[in-house]
Structures are given as C-alpha cells and as structure tokens.
Image (cartoon, rainbow, N blue to C red; front, side):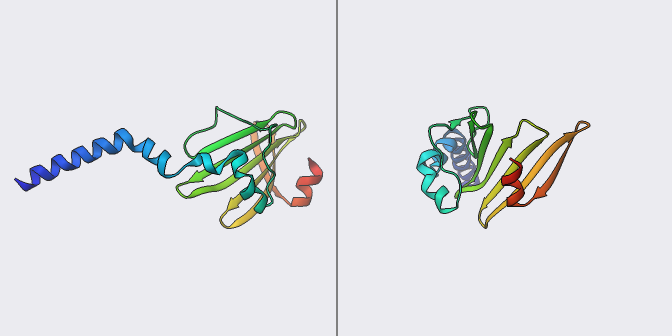
Length: 139
C-alpha cells in the first residue's frame, strides 16, 4: 500500500520536473547576468576583449549552455560555453581571409589561454598550437 503512494508521488514529481525544469534552470542560474555587456567586468578581469555594439548575438549557435557573438567588421566569432555555475570556456575565431583560421580558447578555471591556427588541406583540417606572439603577428 505504501509503495503505491510512493510511486504516485514520484510520478507527480517527475511530471513537474519535466514540465517546469527549463524555467527552474532559467530562474536559478541566470545566464543573462553572465554574458554580453553585463559580463564585461568579468571579461576585463581576465584580460578578454570587452563586448560592444559591434558584436551581435548569433542566434544559430545559442542554447542554454552556449552563446555566440559575431563581428562582421573583422571576421570574428566569440563563443562562451556555460556550466551550472557560470562561464567555463570562451573560444575566439578569426577568419583571416587567407589560408588560416585562428583560434584562442580561454578556460575560466583554471585561467588559461591557448592559441591555435587551422588550415584545410585536401579536405582535412590541420590544427597546430601556436604562441600568443604568433597569434597576434599572423592575424
């Protein structure tokens, strides 16, 4: 008898989690307070470029755990990936118009930046790690 009541309570609980799970996430963990111009203070603390009016949200890449901006003036894309506790990783892409696409990734914990360049050769992407100086000079 008690097991039957427990099953009913569990089913009701599962129903409400499925029905309201997304809105609970949005209320508890507000991504809106950790991206865009509201996020510029955190970006400056980590030596990341501040976002301004030249950056627009790319609606094709956004979801609950990822947001992307594009800047068509200089062929760049910034994508920030989120976890339950906030921003985890940012990837910057720069399309040089030449042979290479340049990337930098910043991990918010530990605070670490890595630089790459990628080239498509014979239908295969070849990515190599480069230094910060090469990243700035090659672009």
